[in-house]
Length: 325
Image 1 (cartoon, rainbow, N blue to C red):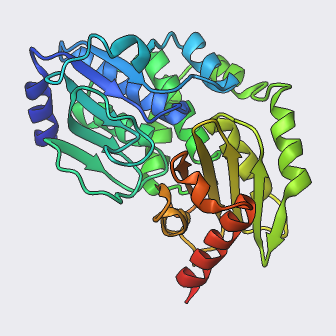
Image 2 (image 1 turned 180 degrees about the vertical axis):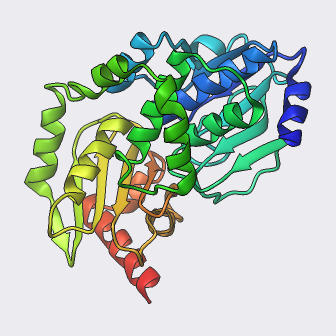
């Protein structure tokens, strides 16, 4: 923890922002909230910030029930200065899913693989099931008291990002579950787990069901309208649950981009490498062995031609062939 103390010292007397990835999910929100509480313990106030929207029922319930205050960049961009300190949480600068805000990104705490190397004053990038696991470990190692709200948030982030301990789980995730569980509020966790879908979400599921195509255990489906990141991920998980599918590729057409979510149960196909390979000439992508995300910006969508769905299919099938060789 010596290096972490150096980060604490560097943040004293500075305006500190803790930035999540765009359209933050429960793990990103929990990790930022936990780090904010940790900084507060050392007398350093920090603002939680993000780009996009808190656009899923589960994340809205989480911020309301646990009294988490996040500020969108739209509210901050006129006041954030280049010298202000930014700490990236559950994301990495130049990672493709995080807006380059006006401040100085001096630190990164993340559990995703690195595809574009960036130098930080402090970095903790480890392959574990959730970023919340890393933040919980800081509390444990530093012996810092934790409120029930922080424990509940971190435990919920850990559970959701590991799909209830079925995806990417490590020994540290299990250890941190054991550490967090006695401190968390069980009734709040129960409330967060209930009613995580909204009626409008069914349209996305229905669209994916109608147009899914399966190629040798690879399921590819498009949603021809804009969907939030979290819903795209949920529908990708749904496609992966099919017996005939071990690799799921789902994408949504948005106003300014095509957003992708990839899932893999094939131990020989790394989801992050798959999407990075498929989109490298048109967009960006990356992630874990089991799950990944990415996008193609509006400037490159015309390069997909008159039949973009066919082009996207070919990009991923060609990438699968390369990775399987």
